[in-house]
Image 1 (cartoon, one colour):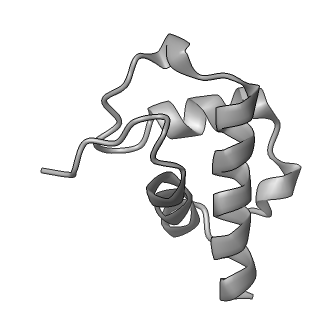
Image 2 (cartoon, one colour; image 1 turned 30 degrees about the vertical axis):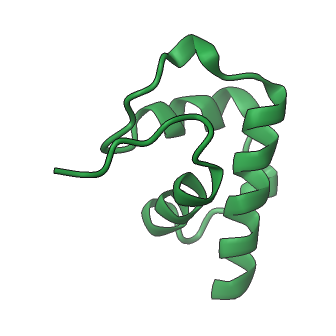
Length: 71
């Protein structure tokens, strides 16, 4: 069973998003889509209403770092 992840686990979420969507440039993803992508990850166990712009931005930047390393 996957480890439970929360909105505050930006680095772990970034890694998982990179694994699931390796061809997607994170900077092209709208926050509404990013919110959905995060909540659909295996192990996501947080309240879907607890996200906010700052958390989504931190996740997007963590994912972007992972994406840049894979290029």
